[in-house]
Image (tube, rainbow, N blue to C red; front, side):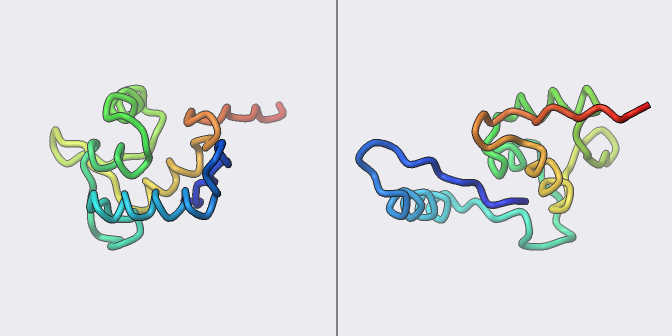
Length: 104
């Protein structure tokens, strides 16, 4: 997963903003997606790691547009899958990047 870029906002230095974000993530106890390759994440945990809503994740699972694993009726995500999903999200708009069409 790529490191999100932080756009400078009025009055706050980007370095300070990055420190605030890092401290907030640490305080919330959110683990990075690369902490254990065998660990599987719930849709809610995946949404937190991606900065999206659980609804966003569940909607894309139903549509089959993001990689996931099914364990019976439960949906889970590996760290590699979360990284792949994160690479497809445009950090500026927090939306999925449009797919390019292949030449016929």
